[in-house]
Image 1 (tube, rainbow, N blue to C red):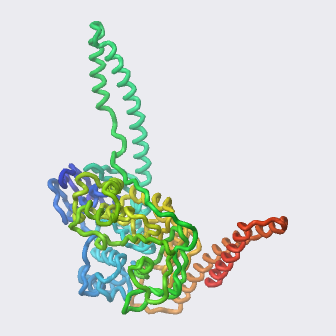
Image 2 (cartoon, rainbow, N blue to C red):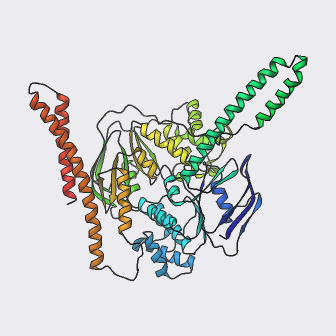
Image 3 (cartoon, rainbow, N blue to C red):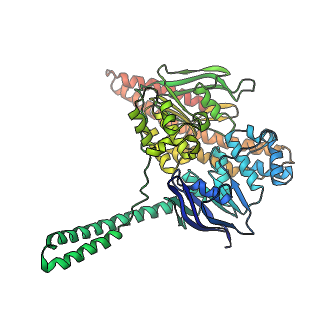
Length: 583
């Protein structure tokens, strides 16, 4: 395989931190590389240096003459004065029909192609950036968090595309499942150094665990040998006949000390819990004939009748641009309903986490100032404790938000959220930019949190760990999805396999297309009906058991069983209505 890019002795210093300290590597043809590391370790910095967006303090980057570079940047600003299709055509020098063909493969059609890319949702903007990059026919892609802001259907599509991509790429992502499915090599940046591993992410992590365990066993043996040698030296160093042997033991101890192995990366991990006031059982919020959207525009979704229980962990799912964030903003009181109403529990205290750090963080505020502004009556000691829990200590507290990495800004905003006690958390893409270790800690904290969580996220491992209820925003409606999050992902994967991604932009809708679309809808409805039927069977068995108890014990008084019997009647009636809605 020919080399495409060669980096030699790259060094980059920020303040006193060596982000890159003599890093050298080669990217060859056909390489699918996942770049991992903690927030602030230098992943984005290295990609910027490779793309020519930033200069290294020293070292060289050499692109081969046959290399065509494609770059996906996290914070690239798209134009607001030209239609998306015209923008794609002008940046690629390719005809509009060719651009729209590739754009359709990523779900950018009709309305989205006619609007300026800057006016599209965050997810659609990321799709536009991906299409604009691919239209250049690159042989090497540099992808900085390409999964950020993508909806799940597009993420699955991009995952499939990159898995079969004939060229090379070097990508970062906080989504471990995507990295596992896409990348065949794993590189890690830690403490300024780059480690290269010729295998997928899970194999690399297993190998790291094995190396750490080997280092622990080796260190244990060495320390035991050092202790024995030290005991001999202490005992006999004053005895003339054994003094030389004692000195030899001390030299041996010094030699053994150099053989001690570092265990792991010794990097700290965020550790926090989410405080919550006392929460009793009952509904947290009811939406009654709710219509959502923006004033002066057609509603995004109408007729929303949803009830969410206190303590539920709820996912809002659906394609980008269909109203997920609008629904969250309406629930959080940031947007007024167009019609209908939301009725919150009278003791609900809502904490809201926006997709965009610009919504909450002043770029010129220091980390300490940003936390203090959100702390309310919290003491200085508690503010510093929260900062430390999210890995901000000493000089880090004086950094301005402007210079923080995306992951560091996300940690500041999470720290602000947990400084106050909320009984409801509404989170819009909380995992974007966070490293995998912090995402795992956040998942555990949310799972243990007794309050209500309503969130949008495409991070599958994260969602699988905490979600118990799913509402899908689709076709101008919000409907309850019967099933687990894993089943939802499987349904989307099946739909993607059933639907062709090669679009002929000059063709018109035909009866064959209508029949195909109807067949897909029918299959989806059938899957939902089967799951509802299974649920109804379980409810019916439980109801029969309670009735059998009353039949066998006619004189027993059991208010708990009476209450549960009434609940089962209600649940069966709701399940039956849901089943009928999918006929």
